[in-house]
Length: 367
Image (cartoon, rainbow, N blue to C red; front, side, top):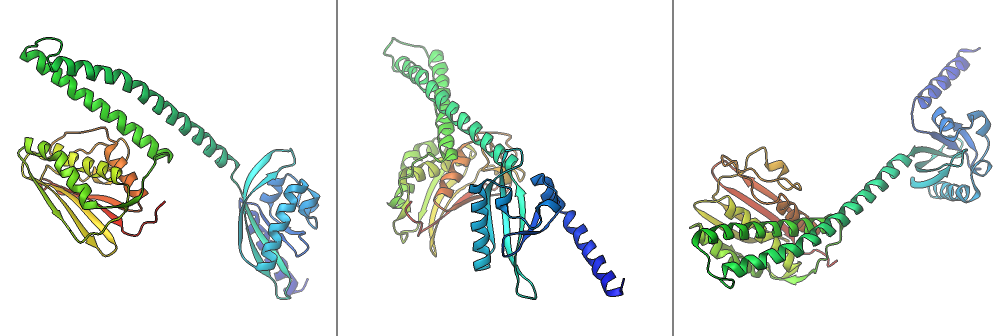
């Protein structure tokens, strides 16, 4: 054997060792759609020896409907030279249907001959897992909705009964009884907020929450929250400050959902601020509206900041050890902001309070 032929054989052997070491099936087809090269992973997937398949086409082995689809997609690559990535169904020799992703590219040799080089990945297990997860999520959503609905009815009856007693409609009560009933009332409201948060998060998570996107005034929303919550801030002897940019024009957003976001952020500020102030600012920044809620509270621990907006995470504030709320409020805020193509984040330093920011685009399309 000449030196040239020896090196050629050695190079070919090296090439086959490389492609046979790749776990994903690889194939090469000529312009007549015949297999001219297959690696061992391809033979293992198909269940047919490579030697038997070489020189054959899809129509020799697969159901006509599948083979026609493979053939048509190959033709697109041959004609356009454009890479093609497809999710396809493939039936193996035992009749089992698999979901595969096939990536195809055009290769032209020195003589101008066209070939398709393809790589296959079997994602059947992944698709089955995704389907099971979807089914589990649907079951969870239905369960959450049913349980939350069933809790609301008795909770409403309990709230009504407590209010009747507190209003003296069922007869006089003493101070000790009133104190106990006030505690009951606060916990009823807390449970009611928890149910509402769970339902809202479930709707957001499943994509079933309706958004009424239309032109609104963000400053008007902030002022409405300010008026509604002013008495809660005053009860803690805090200063409540507004600093609104009057140059902000109307832009597209869901008014009720933004009231929910600002209310939630102000509630958080109230819960963790015992002295000083809470300030809400709005500012027009290029094509964005920047809203910030700043407090002089105890701050948020550095460890808590990265997971602050995760579902069921409760913010542990610096030096307080206190946890407030359901752990869903900030996650709901984040989802609402994301649905509006905006972003939300927080800044905090120990004993210097916290600032919650959200940034909204002025030109979001009305969905």
